[in-house]
Length: 306
Image (cartoon, rainbow, N blue to C red; front, side, top):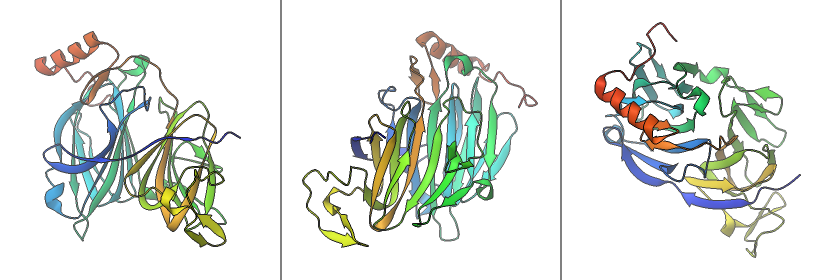
């Protein structure tokens, strides 16, 4: 086993998208090789509808896949091919934009006015850039959850883990997407394919992904359940952790436990030409997409083609 060291830890930065949605961006519009095959990751949450209710009106997508995971509230969605629906708490939508689609997403708060969700963009390889669009809508009840003896809980959204397989399949990046909760004071190790790029995103509690046996000079400040916690080495809410190479990651949970997403995917290692939600391989392909938008020929699929 080879421990994956932490390559970087950064806080998601506040920004606005759509018609004025307040969110935090963990990464995006960066060097595309850094998280290949992933392009962007947003954490959108708020306690006041004015922060998100204007949503993400009609906008184009081509050449990518978008993964929306809702934790609180709902997201109504519709597209130019006549598809529509609503995602509730715990639901997932994996949309393959492929050759092109016009799409809108309108979030709504729960009874307390709260909204929380994530959106991840995954790149498509050149061979699938112009594939037909498709959806995989998954309800919370269809997402398997594994509970270990120490109280660790893992929701398997995509990929295989601990004998369970997530309901989303046929994804080009062959990703693994896990929602993990580790109780207070527990140290846990998770396998990650050595060939994949991997990152964790903390959204509740705190913990350290650094090797607990090598605390980098951080003194012990508290002991819980007989385990030493190096609290000054802890990372918390809205922290993005990017891992270096290896085949496992280790988390030492803080005094209130930790909940995070662990996401990994096989790099495509292809050139990227990027203009907002349109991601192609060459500048000419990108210019063609823009011409298609201007000429009204962006949508290649037909309503009955899904």
